[in-house]
Amino acid sequence: MSSLTASELAAALAARAAAVIPGGVNSGQRRVPGLEELVITATSGATFTDAEGRVYTDYHAAFGPPLLGHNDPDVDAAVAATGRSVDLMGVGVTPVEIELAERLVEAVPSVEKVLLTATGTEATFHALRVARTVTGRRHVIKFQGCYHGWHDAVAMNVISPAEKVGSKDPLSAGILPEVLDATIVVPFNDADAVERALSEHDVAAIILEPIPHNIGAVLPVPGFLERLRSLATEHGTVLVFDEVITGFRHGLGGYQAVCGVTPDLTTLGKAMANGWPVSALGGKAELMDLFSTTPGRPAFFAGTFNGHPATTAAALATVEKLRREPVHEHVFRLGERARTGLEALYARLGVPAVVSGFGSVFVTYFLEGPVVSYDDLLRNDVDLFVGYRRELMREGIFELPLNLKRSHVSYAHTDDDVDRLLEATEVAVTRYLGTRA
Image (cartoon, rainbow, N blue to C red):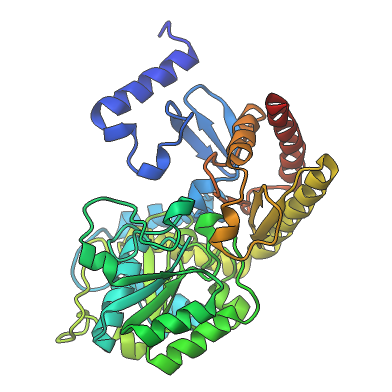
């Protein structure tokens, strides 16, 4: 038996990680200040357990993928069953890939044909590649605050400091200047800026999160998405909706089915497989048929893990469960309860706040509204945003303590969980504000 306490054991695990993994984590977004010794040992439904044995109700949910909750038994059973019957071959196609593709074509308005890959970053990369192929143009337009993965063309201008807004703000060193120069960054909800960029540059694609969830939940103003559709058509530019987050979490047809605006290409991932690593790029057949999966076509598309049977089975099982069970009704109802309850809570406390979100997503910005673009979020009280979330952990509730990060409810969450969230938030906010008095 070890004589170490639970806290000492957790610290030892974190130290082992730091010794062999740069920074101790396998993604830069997992290195959260104040949580350097967080080691997750178990997940289940709406909760996770850390190495010290503490159980948290999880509203972070891995940035959103487990829409059904952690370790959904139907999804995990599908993965296990498929893994017993067929493994990775790297040639031909498997029945489960065909069936998932058929379901995606049925569900998502823009998807006439679809290709599977492993990550959302790969999907957005291929979307821009084929857009440049079909148009022969150089530039792409992205929006301040939207995140589309780590490849060079889009790895910029997400959560930018005020002095970087309006200029190029790359997420990484090592990106070629000419690649940065080929991406035009404009404010979300500013269609006039998009029109100017289209008039001044040879634009191959406009890419956006239809709701920029990587900065919480900045909702599109009425008419904005419709005008993007019109401008893209007018200028012969490919319109790409990155629905890696909004797809499936906001409805089987993605947010495009909610708003009634159909892009040319759509990227999917995250919630499609309840957290298993699979993503998709789909859209107009005339664009999708340009990929080299059709022999002789010019846009190269490859990946040994593409359509891996086990992860594809996870996606198929997730989609089938969304079709047959009242998942969206449940999570939308709880999401609305959370947002309404939080609005009332902050009004009662006299704390200036804008509670935003859509469906199962919620986030509180500590500022005076309205919120229509990233510039508005520069007024957010970052210390309060992060500080109360750290206090929430003391109450057994986990919302990621990073500025502007959204929270989610899943099919595994209950009304009691939302009641507890509201109670704990009042305790956490009051306690944190007391430290600033």
